[in-house]
Image 1 (tube, one colour):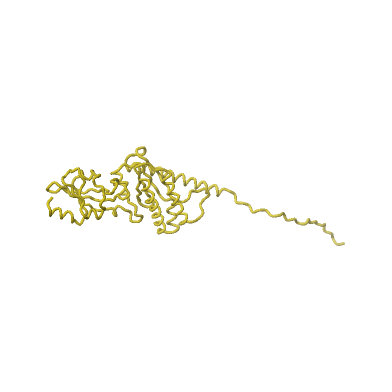
Image 2 (cartoon, rainbow, N blue to C red):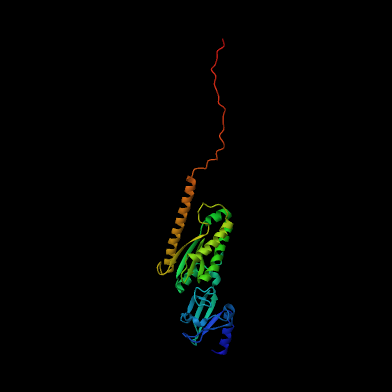
Length: 286
């Protein structure tokens, strides 16, 4: 590459990558804008998948770990083009903000579809908030939004420790995906934290023995419950529906039993003693 081209590449306003030839099995060279946007230590040498992409636009994640489940991996669109000298140029557009839910900051269902297509899913958990309508009806939609943001914050903090990523599908539905296995232990801790948040936000008595307000979830694991995203979501949704049905049935039975119990009688005091009454026969006047 001659000097004018080198200067132009280095000073492009957009992040860019340059391969010396069309299918070169070497790490691409980043320009100054790319280093500013993604840092100087992004391991591009471990991304042979980028080398073999055809010319055109492709949406991929770029991050230090090189997989979809890395917490720092950002959604980008790479515009590839082969130059007359055989070198390949890719302009990089950061799309992360477009793939995030504007309310909670979690990534949306498009990011979920992108990740599931590029990396195998081991476990998928589908969650929704218990009694979410009650929160909206009692305290208003602003409080409902605050509850969703609180759950999103808890999931975003916990998911990296599980090697997982959390998404918001919409409404009060969330998804957690992991390449390995997730279970009741991991999700149970977040349930307890969220239950404490809702208890402070929506105080009030609950039926005796009823589960606290939190979230319910259904788990699906590959390959037992399916291999595609749609199959795993379908399996998790069926399990979630079963959990909510059992919970509603349990609480309804508890309320019914409470209503069937006779009202408690007031404690009886000491017996009242009335004097004996004697009725005398009427006498006629002589």
